[in-house]
Length: 249
Image 1 (cartoon, rainbow, N blue to C red):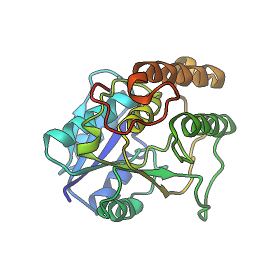
Image 2: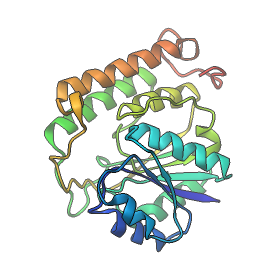
Image 3: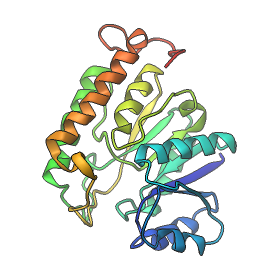
């Protein structure tokens, strides 16, 4: 398999050099999408050899960084792309576990879950994040027929040929709501993989109205409702996954 490791990055001067150092012990196929960082992140990245950097001139959003990573992996003929956050909440040493699961060949998405297994050193998620994650995960499962335990974990492996069939356009943190709806529409095969639950800085902000939990939840729900409405011909009146890929999703 040809595998790309992709990191969405925004103002991660505290962690980026260490995280990339650990990843580069595993592979030279590394893409960083710098989403308009205004701290020392660009300068740090410029000094790290053997990585590819896509830099947004302004902050475009976490979802857009993932969309750009998918596009890059498709254009450069990778078989899989593994996304990992750069805030030291994901352990690069787990990348081989994602590779091993992907290599079995029976899934299209290997999605990290922080709630499948207790790991030594696990920390507690901020209460509002855990509550919203639980509500959204339950909604996705009941509406789309999925069996997720963690809707928002950014540590994932994606089969490039599968995600290239999706039409992803949500640039911000609501990106997973669109992704999961389209994954169900296209009947992508999904498996979860347990990963540690680590929050070094529970005070980190989403920005703007998303810092208010109820507003953040409502925004997620608005995006999900809009995607369901758009995909209704594929998903059907009961929003059950269709039997064949949706041609116009």
